[in-house]
Length: 430
Image (cartoon, rainbow, N blue to C red; front, top):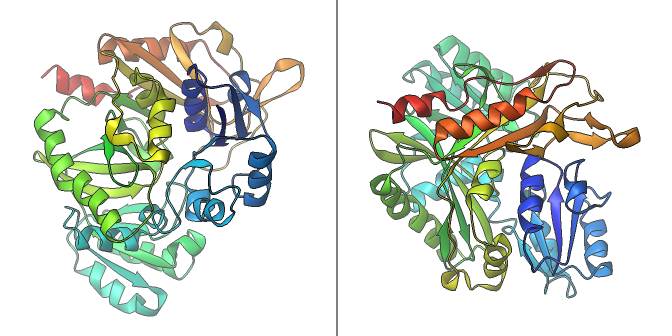
């Protein structure tokens, strides 16, 4: 089979790494890819939103399957573009329609969807610039802390947790009046704060059937002890000890089934991943958000955890046979530590030479923001640069292997959190 993966981050390197292991993979292309994906397939200089260019490449190279990594092309309707072209309509594409992608593309849409289908979530209201005064009055009397979310895509940075009413009012004005997140914050969802432990559950669906993939816990804040600004993710761990069989059964019954059935009942074409961001509140699951693709860096632990051929699952998703397709997982724990450019998630320099990747043998190094330089040098080209994934018989051993790998890699102004998974270890050792 000839496969095209769209994207250039750590998630796409993990997908490419896993797909390349399949005996059914004859040729693998990644657009645009990074220095890591170039080692397992062929990078193609195409932007993820260049639908015309992607369509032409798919026809020219006789691609059998397209795996869409990031959310942008899904929200912009790449699935619909393929369906509208008779030649492309027959190509398998892993990713929902534009209508389905609203689950991530619009926080307001997803909240209303959850309400329609009785999916447990925090209480919320949505405001626009036209209803600013009403919104200011609402947050002034809202219990603290107050969660404010940009309605649209904001690269994982559109959520602010205000600890005071003054901060909530200022943030609402910044988002609606000053367009803090551009068009993404032209609508703002104000939400009840849920106090609990966060985790992510991943679902693959063909529109009728679904498979629940390994769960993971990620770490969003830049600083140790979960302090500082939100990022796209600084690390991840699977399995999650508090996600026991009883809790995951509640997730399936109360969240997964009504979500998949809700999409079907509304006639929404959905063949792909559903990332469910959950809060475990006293043993009960509440949905914080939906994403319509795999998480990053959770993919870097979830895919290594899957023992089976990933290509079998992806093909079953596109041809509607997921109900007859089983998969198995490894017994080991997997953890990933993200290495970032100094200054991230603010501004940061690019182009630093990375040393030591080849010396790592106790972990797998997934490239995120890298590019190839002269003389086979690997250079930094993004905020999140590498994700180093360790495995082990325990979470503790997996973390040890990941951090041993991290210790061998360096570049100017590199930064990583040193406390990934420590909260998990405390739970295990209680």
